[in-house]
Image (cartoon, rainbow, N blue to C red):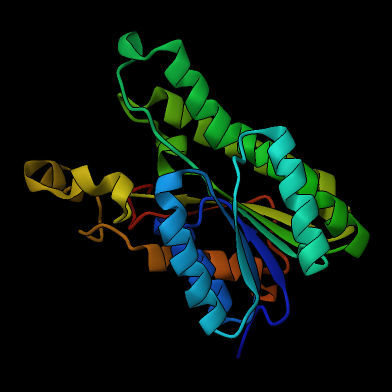
Length: 251
């Protein structure tokens, strides 16, 4: 059974990693996909993903746009609505990290993390709620992190941005619940992606694995399964929640 048949989903930062896995999972379940990427280096991957999604029998298109820029976000969502008709699901997935101890963290690094990780969620969400309010339905899923719940030395900017996403999610769930629009967050733990590649090697890997009850890093597929659940009617009575996909790290 396809859980998202004829739905339209926006996914930010989907050219690789968790975002790509979510796009493929949604397409497998019948959703049309509009996704963003931001760097020239991701363009080839974005085009390849378009082809994969189209091969699954759904409509798919990528946009090179910066979700951290309000004007670009406004144009992007308006073009999606014009081309796809509406937006039923929004996954705010775009994110970066600039890890450093606070005394070494520059104002520019702090601001860049906040812009990409947190402001982008505001920018895109503010645009997609318009068609959702008109339809009186919708699912917004914001990608937080286990670091936003627990914190981590050397990741103050990342932790603050991801904790901000949780507060935003809970507030929007209360604002929009009366219109049958749901808003939830996912807090992945240590997931095997390009961003965490340096954590998966040698003694560093062992030190992290020792803290995870399931004894391994998670996969993008496992995060995409949770995202599918929150996007579908299987979670129709769930809003304002944070689901940790972390192998028990947050237990």
